[in-house]
Length: 270
Image (tube, rainbow, N blue to C red; front, side):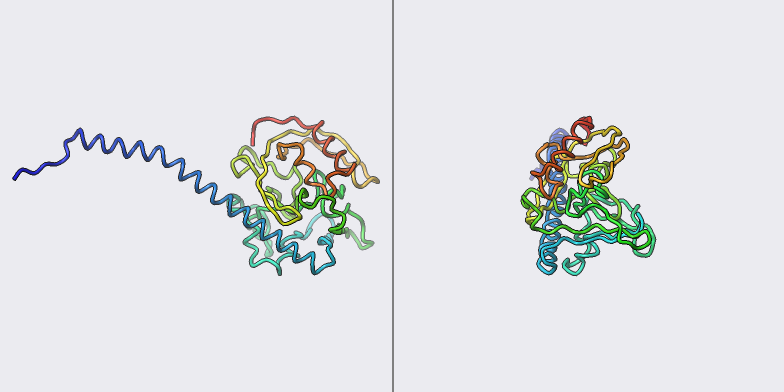
């Protein structure tokens, strides 16, 4: 009985076919992995939004107030106030953020949270555009307070950001100048994920811009905001810029959005 095996030509053809299939399927597997991490990120933000809804129910529908001593040591509104409503602070980590330049409870470097609270659009310490009011003095030595707004002040809850992807460091916010971290900053394939104040979450396309130095007065009418030049990462659809505002249809929101658009040059970087 004769035995037949593969000829060299047939073996090479089989290897070539396997190589072609691998080249075709590998990018698909990579995309599937990226999509899975993006889904995890959106899932985390949905749970953060549910935790915030529970917090609001317990605190007369009022967002958390932040008390700060000087400009350092500001507590993170999510980690501090929502910890009893979240199963774990692990929900505050984005699967695509691994930098360790944030300071932990023991003062040592630790992994940064992936999400920031909506303090405001550009200069959150003063504007009062987001979910916290403008900074005011408490009367104590170097003490300041950011009063949380009432949910009744939200005119479009389904269009207002609660929290979302950021490269900000503690106390973590969504200001657009905090979101740029070099090319590739829009870590979910050119997009950022956001939770909204009505508890839904979705992905929003982003683009890079360079904002020129300027001054403006929005929100805190008693102070002129001096802004230096900065790289920014912001929603690429102008309508999504209004989502940083507790009242997207307000004159203050329109003023700061128009100011930002007129002072920023955008490009194709993400």
